Image 1 (cartoon, rainbow, N blue to C red):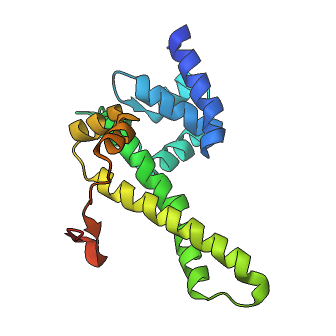
Image 2 (cartoon, rainbow, N blue to C red; image 1 turned 180 degrees about the vertical axis):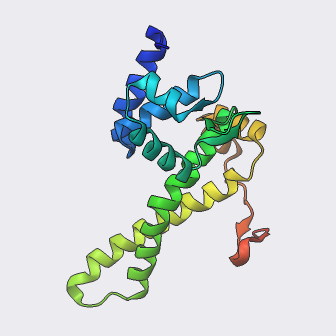
Length: 193
């Protein structure tokens, strides 16, 4: 079964964007096809739609499963594995952000913390050490914000995102920044005093 021009354009674009997002073209196209498919597809169907070898499809599906971006489905009276993407777009976005954080941000933050604990070292390292500290503090601030936001229910998160720069205007009008809960070790929160 051939893809419609709309479907083909979407799939090809996702493949091209895949390399910019850190995945290969094949994986991007497989994901795009599953995303726009009304029904779950098996590996043979994916290979047929995209003109890929069965082995490329299998490797692509394994990578997508490692990213938690596809779901395995079984159909009654059919022993083959079928695949689909989550229906909830917010779940997809949350998964993507969490997986990118695990693979990219967390290792970087760990390395920055390790470098910070090593101390300044020689006088030649003073500037580099201060820049590393600045970067560590910024990433910790952003990951703290992310940790707070990821726990919000989807409706509340969508409301917050829709506020955009209105938050800045609200802070300007109030003339002060409202204290927020401070995260403590162990994941519990306490009110800032």
